Image (cartoon, rainbow, N blue to C red):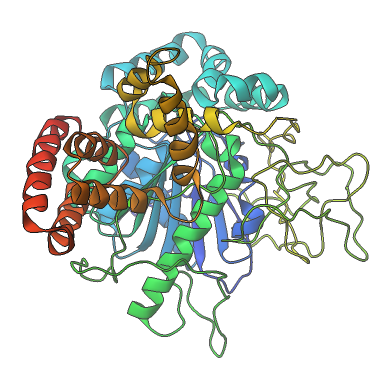
Length: 557
């Protein structure tokens, strides 16, 4: 009688052993070190498990030619560690794993974040062609082109050390495993299954991502019942590396609010993750984000939250991040304070790893898959009181960073036999964006190029002063304030335009709302509510406009 044992994945743990489990999956061609700048904050609240894809980061070169096989290996790894249910965030091909988890093992998954992901990655032909490129020329051609695919031009120019790191990381990947991953993406297609995904889902995409563009993210949001969209300005495909603070804050908010919903639906005080130790209490989660309840929850999924775009904390287009000392979830930016070594801490450790959260101390070696001639998986303890030193060599934080809470210890990435963590981000000196420039950028981002181009055509002609006024004080003012997320502003604007009978503007903003992640159902509910307070005739006219725009936009969904 033969018995087949599912392979496992190289992995490591960070965070308290009794905390709920949050799994982070890497992008194709990267290692778990792409999450280094998220781990210090996430590991304050969750038991963070990161894994490497086969043949990446020194992991065993055991190709997985279909996404489902990667999913099965991940579950075999978690089963061996005694993890039942968990939260999951995956970037690129690991986002495909997350979607597969939600479709085939929904009872294991409590919350989901799909980053730089898609229901269908490009075309089958393009992935077959990339695989053939590796078969004939090795990894070098793919490695050299990675920075262009992963980062915005401004970031790549300002962060040459990160660019070199990315090229070397891809070069160290096993070619056979990379080709197998290309084959997996060539056949991956879950467009018809999106409606069956019932877990709370954050869809996060860089505004300048050309690999999995925002249009792909909108397809995910339109198809998944309980999904919200976050478009991160100034970021391309590898968003967690390019905009670490924004991504970290979005993940903390999403998984914290999922904990709040699930704890009320699964029992008092329990986060859906690793089991609560007997006689103990789960690790606290700071600052849950209130979510508006609505009917229609999928069975066993708790209370669904509002769908629509979520605010990206303190980001403006084209920004390149500087050092990010860490932050408290939900805390506004500003109030920077130097981070000093704790008593007894050695500060910068020779051989440590610089990062957006400061130098890391070395940690025990990573766990390797069982059955591969390596040690059994074991936890990697979080070092205590290891913080970044202050002094003349430490640059002042740039805008949109937030301070590290006192006493926060940064978990150290474990050394691996493959490729190591990214270098420190270079600090940048940037002038504050002028109101007019910020307003012009936001108008183009929200209304689209056609509307922005029409407004700019008046420059120097009749009405030019009025357009400058609108650009500066409307788009550079309320639309850029942090108090309300963009989805809420869209719906408020539609209500106001309905009340005023401004139907041309209503059409323009309805189209912008749909393209910004607001669903037709959201718009219908808003106009129905407006009928009560603005009058049925006004709502009749608004519904006629919205019905036409929704029909026109439907083929793009």
